[in-house]
Image: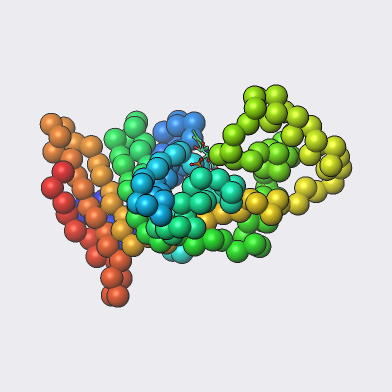
Length: 196
Ligand SMILES: Cc1cc2nc3c(=O)[nH]c(=O)nc-3n(C[C@H](O)[C@H](O)[C@H](O)COP(=O)(O)O)c2cc1C
């Protein structure tokens, strides 16, 4: 059986992520996150995947950003990963839910201090007068938190995309690519070959 047609798509994804990390990519966890607003208008941007297990795919961001506004209006999203050296793509679709405060706190605590200050300083997706304004905000929060642990900002947390579809795509010669779509059913994950 093809590797793409394994019975556990989460385990399969975790293996492909390890393969991506081993093939020298700078950001093997980079993924496109597609959302849509209340009017159904789509948007897409790159994020880093920060966790994946049977519960879903986790990412962190600013809760006042455009993507967060989209997810409040329409808590469904899609992810797309592409590991070019491996000729592999994975697409994921599902509902999105907030992670717990404890999960967000635990991840925030692992971030570099300057990244933590950046999370406090950035009003992500909102207009800024110039780059100096970000640097001014970073300087202000550095004075606010000169020593010790930096708490997680209230406007910064994570989401978990709970997959109901995961599709594995493998590049093959002459565009005879392999595609296997796994759909979540009451009885577990159901694989289905698709024409490329
Ligand atoms: C490789 C890469 C990884 C990124 N990772 C994140 C991330 O994990 N979280 C995040 O909020 N933004 C991340 N960004 C920035 C987003 O692409 C985007 O500019 C930002 O989140 C604002 O998006 P929005 O206005 O649609 O909310 C990343 C950008 C790139 C290119």
